[in-house]
Image 1 (spheres, rainbow, N blue to C red):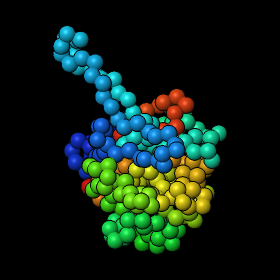
Image 2: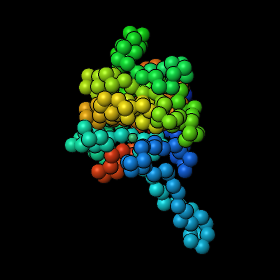
Image 3: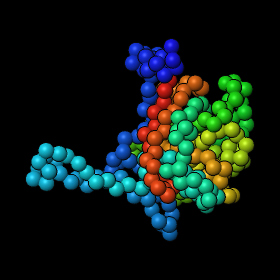
Image 4: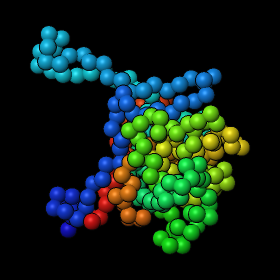
Length: 257
Ligand code: MN
């Protein structure tokens, strides 16, 4: 049987599940907050145009306003100064938007330590148990943080010292960008970098290394607990915003049952 024919049969007849990794997009969707001297991203907004009324008797529709980096979204290489000559979100080759994914689960560690940082050694240990990272695929970093995504306050988890959310160490970020064979890094938090990464050297090392290497970031994912450590295929669908630095994205995982 042709590959796509058996795939379609598995989708409709069982055998392949589709897991939605996307957070619902609304005015309540948490957004990152930068120090006050910097420009801030917009929350998602709906502006009603008509709703079966005299503005449009048979139709309902809205304008939307959103940051490129609001909700579940993709970071394109040109998002960071290290990738400023790299691609925009519209120029990502379509074939890269469907790719294998592995899930590294550190939710137990993060439950005890919200500032937990992923190290190269953690990835190496995972590879010993589960095999190598997928070339041209996603490393999805599970932290359990998706359980907080219904609350801006709990999601950002900030105190007087700034936000406390899990991330990646400076060394590991550089390794993921420059050495690991991955296409990009997916996380459950508001950004790929740790909450404390403003104070790292360099600041926001994950953004610096990933974007500088022409790789991608995926943020505010949920339902990673429903994925196996390896074997899932991700469908990532950002809007092709011309010259855009990223886009809200629908992210779906295909999982063999
Ligand atoms: Mn972003």
